[in-house]
Length: 174
Image (spheres, one colour):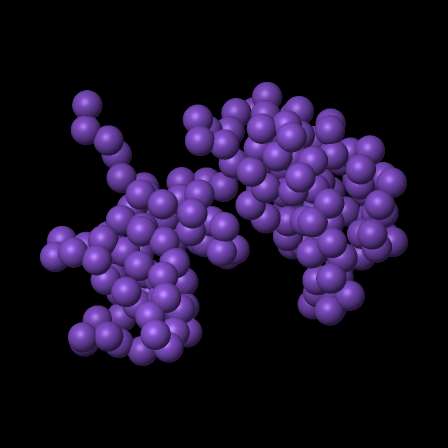
C-alpha cells in the first residue's frame, strides 16, 4: 500500500538520514510488536526516481495483503507525527520475501532453521559459497561467526568474512 509522506531522498542517504531511519525503527519496533508483527527493516530506496520508505514486517505464519494494509494504516499516524525528515516519499509495507538477504542481527534468530546461502569475501577451505540450514550467530574465543548446518555438521564462518547471507527457497515435499 503506497502513501505519500515526508522524507528526503537523494542519491546517497546521509548519516542524518540513517540516524532518522534508525530512530524510526526504534519507535516502530515495539508498536508493531504489540500488533503481533516483528519489524525486520526500515529502509529508504528509490524506484523509477520515486523515493520509497519500505517497512518490512514478519510473523511466523506469513504476511498477507491484509497484514500489510493493517500495518500501513496503523503506522500512518505515527509517521505523520514523527515526520523525521522533510520532503515526500511513498510508504511501502511488505513481507521479507522468500529469498531475503539478512541485514539485522535479529533476523538470524527469526529465520533460524531456514535454508540459506552464505557468500564470503575470501574462500574458506577453497569455497566462497556455503549452503545449509541457518543455525544463527555464534561466537568463538576471538570472533563472531555465522553458523549454518551443512551436510557434514555445523559450519562456523567468520562474520567479518561474510559478504551476504540470503535465504534460499526450498519447495516442501508434498
